[in-house]
Length: 161
Image (cartoon, rainbow, N blue to C red; front, side, top):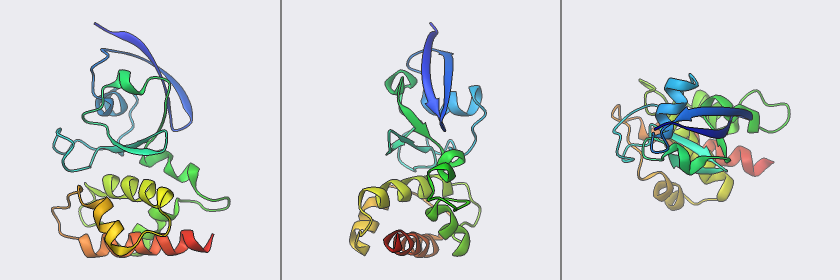
């Protein structure tokens, strides 16, 4: 049975008619046309579906839409709006471009969204903390070293202020 659920996605209020247990990922992609978060495993194990809910990285494939009613959801498409004044992209997004961290790009949503939340919470994270914070993400292309360079680059840029 559908219910009216109010969300704020990338700064825009949305009213969705969906069953309360519908995964947030499905609502984002199918109802709102937001395609940054991807379906990877459907079990919250790969991270391709990661979004920010009130600033925290959340796996949207296992998050019921009713659980985020009234909360602020930011997807890859809306991340640039959280960038420092004058920046076209979030520092993490720019670092991934600068380091050419994507190969096929399917998983990059999860890496960028998780990295952005991690660096916001721990701007001076050590290498070990970065590895731990990113441990649950998967990249089948094997660009892990480029991804780590991008995250470190973003951390340095964030530290500069």
